[in-house]
Image 1 (cartoon, one colour):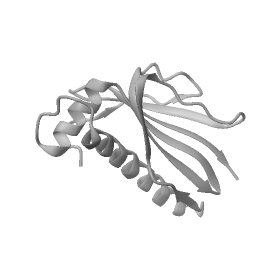
Image 2 (cartoon, one colour; image 1 turned 90 degrees about the vertical axis):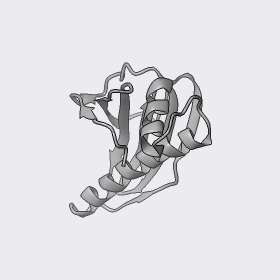
Image 3 (cartoon, rainbow, N blue to C red; image 1 turned 180 degrees about the vertical axis):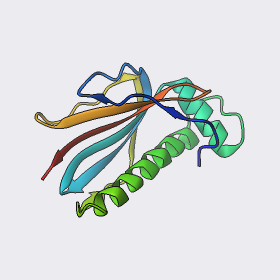
Image 4 (spheres, rainbow, N blue to C red; image 1 turned 180 degrees about the horizontal axis):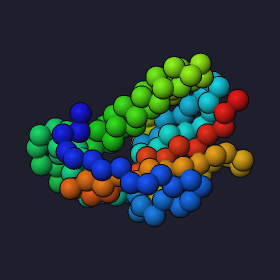
Length: 135
């Protein structure tokens, strides 16, 4: 649980997300749906979300922040896996990999479908991106 209000925005298909990410947590997808699910967070959102999850102030990106954003990626990917299974689409999930930097961007193989859902929170905006190929 994140313990803050989250408002989803309009999904953007095949477009740049416009979210300046300092921390991105990615989960690889294998099976009938192959690709990557990523949670992109600016530093302020990552710190605020982690603080809300842990019930304390978080002043700097550390292992707790990396783990919290990785856990959000896990929750979203797990929900995706269940929804896909209900439609007979088998998918396996990798463990999250979290990347930290300035203006982090991810790229993927050519020919994949891509969309991102922006989310607004009181502690800052973040995005959930899916790049995939359905077999």
